[in-house]
Image 1: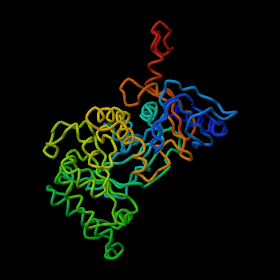
Image 2 (image 1 turned 180 degrees about the vertical axis):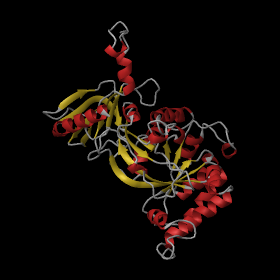
Image 3 (image 1 turned 60 degrees about the horizontal axis):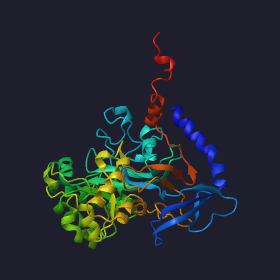
Image 4 (image 1 turned 90 degrees about the vertical axis):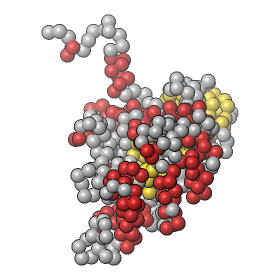
Length: 421
């Protein structure tokens, strides 16, 4: 708690000075994620939390110059799916706010209301190059898990910068279990909930209930069925994906995002034709359950080649290991995905998916989330040298690095609490 208060205070104290400066990063290899492509020996200029210019040439007079010769300069990474800040310990209920299995409220829950900026996983994630994340809860009592939010990873109390950006739901095997035991029940459950939300407030006057959901849940789903907020549905099996895509014909106003899509490569053309983006884990290749018997390491690459918009994340490691998304992207490249598409899948694609075209890119006017790397960011041995969030340099340390440094030299005197009395 004290650490986070000090960090928040330091960022607030540093921000005005940092934003008043013009900072130029020069000599590095700049990955813009724009039509400019990759700029060798480039110069990036930022001021007042925004990017002023990206190109070549000398830095402007009076700028604070950061030499980055031999380094890579990229946009800050953006986690398309994360639960960082929602659980300090998954096994300890008082610290775990990812789901609410005992609550009557599900669709109306909001991840933003549970976000803890003091979560130690935030620092761990940031020093690996992540500057932003979509935090999303988990369905627990029915198909819906509530609204996700967007956060920056500064660790400050003002980290939440967009609420209610997506609604999470599940179908497939998990949805079947939650809805009574079959995929048919889950599908009917979903359609009935949609119909209740569309009909609200008609039919809710007497007892506050629709055919399936309560007044409060119907109010929460209204923006989703009206197409103002996308519905993210976790589904893996090829036939389940096709079933979900039929919702595009039934509810043309609704926006869909497919989470998982482990067998997506089998129906990649249909996904592309429907214009539905997917969030995949490229390392899912073991058929550990019946709905992913056709899992393959080439899934992400095949989806890309079919023209599907692909973001990369891992819902199973979303709480404490969001940082592993970087390794997932590297493995996607090793199994057929292009480097450009893989990097965009963890930066500009997630930002655009949530309506933020000013993040995940390095261009004039974009928010100055910038990372300086000591090598190719998709190579396992590379790491960030510096991370900027909205133009502010952030601490490159976590609880783990502090413990490492504290006990790195055992010849040094131990803290007094460790001394033998």
